Length: 245
Picture 1: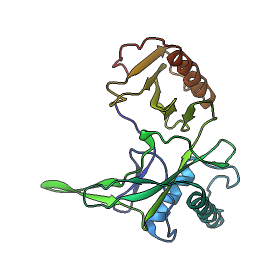
Picture 2: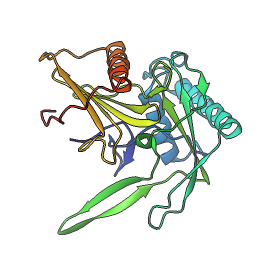
Picture 3: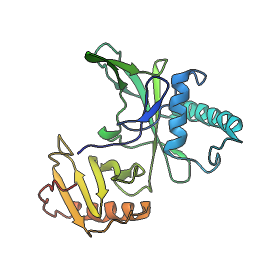
Picture 4: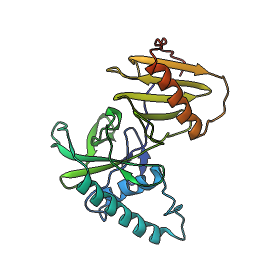
């Protein structure tokens, strides 16, 4: 059981989605790694102004995307207080600028950054026959990293990153300053809040099941999180962690 939230890893000529948080906007959009991150930023949450990427519009699309990413980066550097993340072994610390993009596409400052959103280098395992794989890292160039968090509707004391995937559907964020993890699969809904290990041993846990295979829409996810957050705030006791999911 693990959190799978989109990020891009780079292997020999291929892209695959692994585990971590958001796309990263780098200094040099012409570099391959930066293009990879820019592409994932487009895939993570399309803003209506760009529309879908098609074969016919790809050149204009990439130009518009590069312009928007540059504007996002400039806004973040001018308006956000950075967080120093790292170091990670031999990789030096980075200044990371986290900011939100609300449901209307507007940039917003984040009052809180969930620990589940923290940026770190992508660990790319390159296999070798007969011996352990080499660990390589995709690290944006320059001293700063800009991370846009695609937000759901803003609610008092609650920050929600837009849900990802389908089986399971997942969302992360914070409730009253504590990290939360939402998960839905095969009709089982759960919300974990707080704790050193929010997956295996959350501080507070709630689960419901309607035993259906229907995939809920994002509004249903937001309503569930808000409703269960209300139960948590009211002092409802935690439930036993179910291993079904």
